[in-house]
View 1 (cartoon, one colour):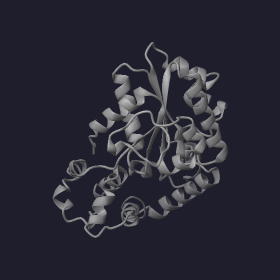
View 2: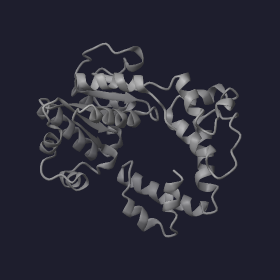
View 3: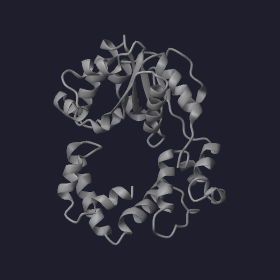
View 4: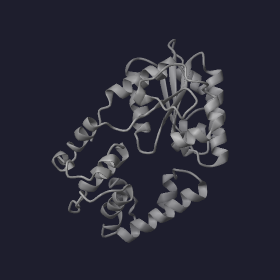
Length: 289
């Protein structure tokens, strides 16, 4: 499934090239998708761009960053080396809200603060974050100052008192285009409840729907779905518990979730999962999304 949001990405590109700022939106609205799409668009246009996914960068210590990114030395100077090219570039810090532990959040906030000050001659700094976390992080908001331009209505969030770009939910034509790619569900869409149609304005829920109807199990009845909890339950049944190895899959996922909670992180290293995986079901889980 490919959701075409060319107008959104064009406006996001203009925002990123005009200065540093935040990219905000609720969970599942497509912030990471938009950031990755922007990164590809900038690079194809010859504009230096560096994407740093915070959810994949550990706790943000110098040693971890050097190891994960294959950098040597100070990260700010390494970014300068990677991004410098005679044209003002863009550094994209994706998923700031993935830094759940206070120490991790402090580490990345320090890096972002340094980048906005020390690299302003070579690049703009863009940080994606859930709107809730943006409103709660005064230190992050302070880094980007007051809005400097009036954005088109769908991309402006009056609740964020900082230069920011809001990723809006999908519009009806985008939803219809997406469901039409999922086993031609477009004919069933009109029978969905109004609550379910509202859920499908968020790309993450469309992804869940695609995974459900393309699973080996018979497609479930969808017209009765009215909440995200119901949709998540269907996904869980079709991709985890409904499999012959469902108990083993649930056991591994439970242990993985405990590790996430203990580490206060939204990611866990694969080698740790492999150590937990006494039945060899990790590969099946990954292939099943």
